[in-house]
Image 1: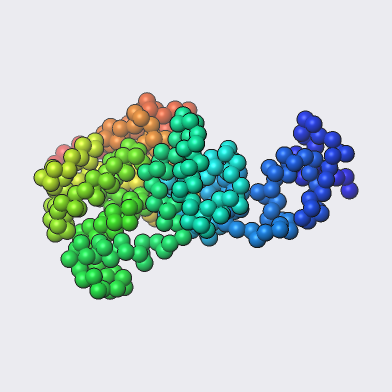
Image 2 (image 1 turned 90 degrees about the vertical axis):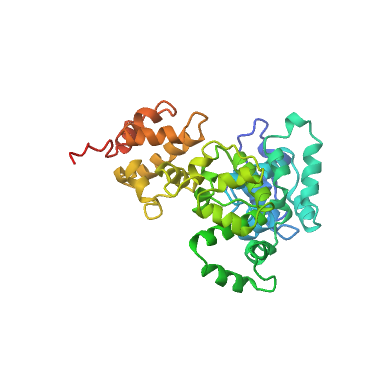
Length: 384
């Protein structure tokens, strides 16, 4: 059997077969240089006989090298991915770790030691702040605003934490009630009150409702252009609930008057389109379209998609899962664009001109998209 470097397979510019050395741990693979061995170690450790136990930092390092989210359950728990609510938060978190492990070359063993000593947050900040500000990347400022995601990693999620009990006390419930008693009591409440309590739980857990939940639309987060705007809206909600009673909050939500409550309590809230979502019982289907595309991609979500979205935005035209996913990604690109206007998209939909409008915002070269974006509008005028 011809031996070759397990990492570069002989492609390194200074490769020499005479320099090949076997891995001292497993004696099964060879490397032509220390650089190749160090690079490959995040993968090879799982097939080798390492001198130390494999830990979750090793799984984190492998995910960072592959630029993917970790799937190992304990790793997700140890390093905050279970606490990152949205896909965007998870993406920023892995990018933060990529910076540490791949670019700053902090060994997994060191990151593991930081975590077990309870120093992970402080050491991440210390490591990044040693760099010039312009070299820290775009994810470190996000981390500074969301340290709780990592600081609380490894602790039980808010279902068995104090957030649900704190929210319950704010709703004038008893602090002696168990989590099970609280959940049973909430289940007997009217739907609007259940939604308000759910919102309080997210606020007290320092999180945000994800797009998978209807309260993401109901409380106006769908109106936000970016995750940063969602964070700002969450901050304003947290300020609001310290100035009003839960009864006031529920009554305003039920009466579609939350925006008025913000102003009455002196909490400024000038998010564009927020009044569009908070001001009436009926909501334009474009907000449910945005909710769908903000959720994780899957082949077919027909059973979960709002019925109006199926008709209004062309998903009923999809012949298979690939067309469904392609159309969804086109709309995602639209909403991600600075020029993507949800209300203008709604107007284009009811005029039967989705493709014409979206093509001014997103490059639509694929002729299939025009077919997919057809809908039954404008409706013919009635003779009645």
